[in-house]
Length: 178
Image 1 (cartoon, one colour):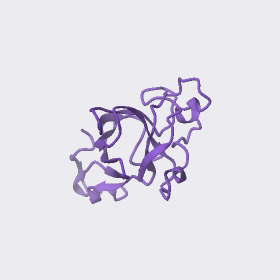
Image 2 (cartoon, one colour; image 1 turned 180 degrees about the vertical axis):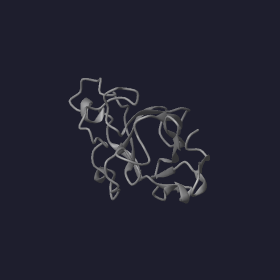
Image 3 (cartoon, rainbow, N blue to C red; image 1 turned 90 degrees about the horizontal axis):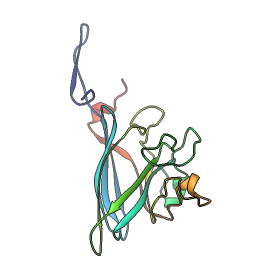
Image 4 (cartoon, rainbow, N blue to C red; image 1 turned 180 degrees about the horizontal axis):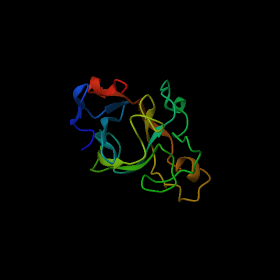
């Protein structure tokens, strides 16, 4: 992995250790709890974690443009610097913040295991998600294909159930500007 403890040699400076950046978000509400990490890997950002608290089913999972969580609505719209239509995580046309659905499984209080690599979000540069808000919605995201009046803007994913700001996780050295 390019970012993962890659040792670069420079004639003037000597060995330089290039560490991957990692960010974290802790989702906490009366009914939903969980943590998600975002770690740089060769082909994008690895998104991994566990969330508990919703009934079995699929729920929209997005990064919103603002880091204001006084209420989840204060987080603004989906992160969309290219002003494109809403889509799924693997669609060619999508918002930067479109991470599709996560699936809760089990009876009663469900659990969602999140584990995928996204090639659009980033922890640096134009598509940087640091300081933005991760939002879990109350319905399944139709990925822009549902034909509903909000399909192309929100995926018709319903209300915002829980949200939190994405922050620096580790290692501190990786976040120092190059």
